Amino acid sequence: MREQTLANIQIAAISSAEQPIARASAQLTAFVGRTLRGPLNQPIIVRSFADFQQHFGGLWQPSPLSYAVEHFFEQGGRQAVIVRVANGASPVTLSLKCGRETLRLEAKAPGTREFLRASVDYDNVPGGDDQAFNLVIQRVRSPGSERVEAQETFRGLSVDPESPRFISNVLMDSDLMRVRGNVPLLRPDRTLMPGTNLPVGYVSSNPDGDDGKPISDYDVIGSAARGTGLFALEGVDDLAFVYIPPLARVVDVGISTLLVAARFCRDKRAMLILDPPSSWESAPDAVRALKALDFRSDNALMFFPRISAQDRLRGRAEIFGNGGAVAGLLSRSGEAVAAAVSEREPEPMLRSSAKLAKDVSSTDRWLLASLGVNVLQSVRNPERAWPALRTLACGASASSDWSYLAQRRFALFVINAIERGTRWCAGQSNGPQTWGRVSSQILNFLSELRSAGAFAAVPADQAFLVICDERINDSADGVNILVQFAATHAGAYHSFMLTHRVGGSTVRPVMVNRFEATLVLSRELEQEITLRLGPKEDVVSVLALN
Image (cartoon, rainbow, N blue to C red; front, top):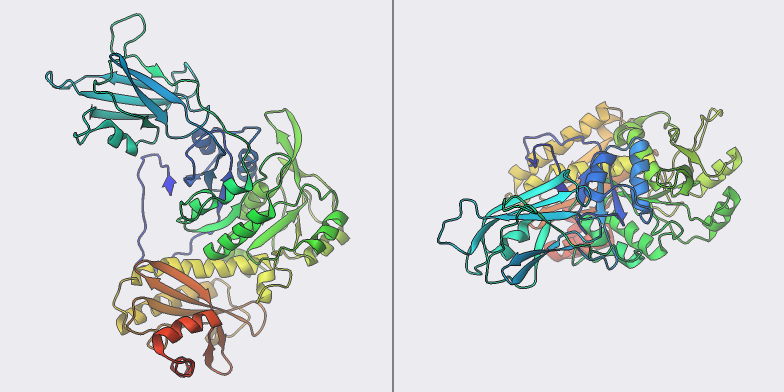
């Protein structure tokens, strides 16, 4: 995932047994949709709306995503990852004269708003070398502008296909342009300042780009094999929320996209934010539609109603999907640990930049909550009690905890932190030394969470359990770790089996019967271990807890 810093330095943290598991704030929100410009199918982190403007062009009426990102930061969002998708967009080109021939370049990012220019010179090129040249590529704010937003310099390029500096190969690493078609035998002519022989001029890109057609559900879903659309987020860690804005102002996201996105979020252990459909004109409409809606997921959430906010391009208030504002609101409401241990959740209050598109009565608020839909507020609730924030599980989850947003976010935070912090054991010797180190690391992390107020409903010796020994590991590749921690509801526990291999890590839910002291695995995981250790009865005896 690409992330811009002031010094253009990327920092990567590597986990080890000696490092404590980081209690990172799980508040990264992903947006997938259409933007004015920017690279396609490449996740890029932005930390302000100014960052978004620099990379993706700012507000654009055909882009609900651009307004959602604006609402996100206005409501307190801290960082977002953007994936741009398009439907039939094509890049601008740039033509450099090479004697009587032409070297054609094209923008890496498609669309009409890539304003690029290039300069060619022969500075410090040996006199006998008539195939080498220097190339400078710039992105400017607008046609004719001298405000440079990005610049790349390539020295000692060559039109010789046998050269290690062959232009087609070198520009594969460019963030701005690529070579289109064949490379002429002659190097590009020097670009001169108009009306002079001074070699400091630029050639501007041609106005031949295309922004494409409105995007469809197909474009948003993308391809898992090619890593496009939603699946461009596959390599992004620490996702808290995923939001897919409406495809257009009056076109809701289709159910096929929501189903794929919900499964993706389940696999990534993130929460999917859904907009209430535009057809829900009132709370009673929403109640009737929800009863007929065949969508249940403990990895999804919804708030009602939509919001009214100022459209700075149209100069008036408009109705928007609320997902961007909801993500910002949840980000500023505190980290997952604080939300889970708080005696009372903060009210879902919008900041003054947004208003409710519809009023919702107290009765309807409680009725919607019973169906898994939360209600936004623009003023303080005069009542002493309000519904706890829900997921869209609506009783369909295996855990009653996961019908509640705070508890679901906390569980995802815990297992994500442990998975990320114990990746060091992949490739390590699968033996007692590794097992002991990883168990100690996880126990320390869970103890810190209990000190912060988590797992307070049970005694300390029943708050959590970590198993990493010969009972669930053999000599096969990969280290298995069983982690269990107390749920909010009395007597309930959340249990996961983590497996770290050189090729990657997996997390699967399991069930642990603490009272009978017997580990009962889910059928899928039981079948996997049976293949390794032998028949089912042998597996049960191996996994019996003393």
